[in-house]
Length: 184
Image 1 (cartoon, rainbow, N blue to C red):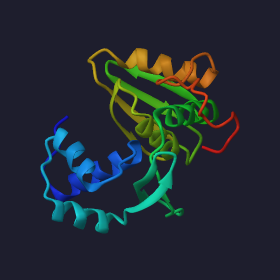
Image 2 (tube, helix red, strand yellow; image 1 turned 90 degrees about the horizontal axis):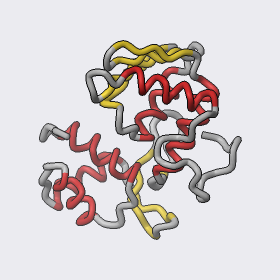
Image 3 (cartoon, rainbow, N blue to C red; image 1 turned 135 degrees about the horizontal axis):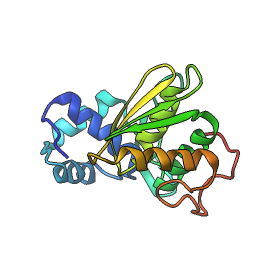
């Protein structure tokens, strides 16, 4: 992964890390950023956390950093495990995916009007390894697969999730997942 050394890119990576990983200290966060090639001083990291509105919250891992969610609910949430994000993707595919068509490394997903952002967000948070990136409109999501011919397999996998024939990408049969029907 190549991350530019800009403030915006650093903030985005910090937000992503805090959403996926239980980070207990600034030193731990600095190490995670360094692993991505982003060297930051403690002062810069401290300033970044303030600018992002990050706070420490109690979680199953003890006190961890969290950033406020986007949209209407600005309550800081601790990181969720991959299984929770994958289960959410599975539920949203079942509820929202209308069609999935592939061409080379591109997949076009259709949803009901206004639902594409939700589905794209679920793909982003589940960190599906085959997906390089996604762009969402009102009722359409464009996924870019990592391999030149990976679109067809990715489309088939998401359609299988929508039909309930496949579990979510990273092992949604994790017993720590919320029960079926719980809110996404």
